[in-house]
Image (cartoon, one colour):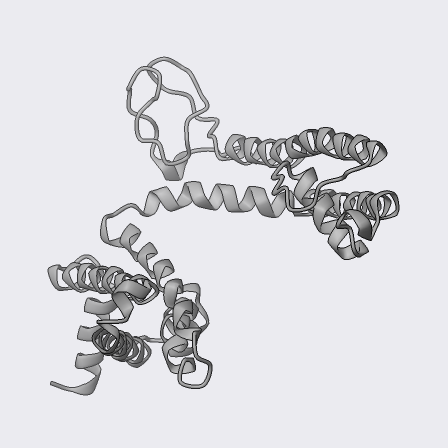
Length: 278
């Protein structure tokens, strides 16, 4: 088989899902990913890892070799290898095999192989669920649009926990467990997020009053980022609606990829002829 024909054949199988061979390859890949994660999890359990240490290690090496060959084949048959290597999936594919190689120099790095779980996102292509990714894109755009407000929010929270941490350090002091301002700031973060580990507790009446104020403030703060993200998400969802009216019931507000009216079930206009809100 000529070289260009072989590359094209491999490309259809490895990158495509419209053929039986392509679907079989992706399904086998997903099974291998889950199997390698199972090996990784079992290796972290002492009661299992001790008697089966070498077997699990060899399985991990085998999966790493398999994924390395797959990565090299993707680079080989890709029309633009550099574009694939810089893409999201390309970076994830590379990071999925690096931990095992790094473990030779940094023991314990192999457990970072859990990043292989990101590769399971390919199941969206295999099961024809790509349109569901559009919803995740809406959520991602909402987070990006709200990034400045969220940054300001976290900056304000950072200032507050520093102030409350410093105050509780002055009020309680080392005698009650608040041995430093960083440790006191840790207490303020735990308290303001309403986690409450209880490893450091104010003992004085003034310290308890400050802790009560911090906890009440925490409940108020938790609602802020939720409101910001919800508002941006609502904007994105409204922007994703179409102005096209159903020819049957004359009602608008359908999703941009809708084929039938959500109110009466009538057929809508073709997607390329619709007007989308901006």
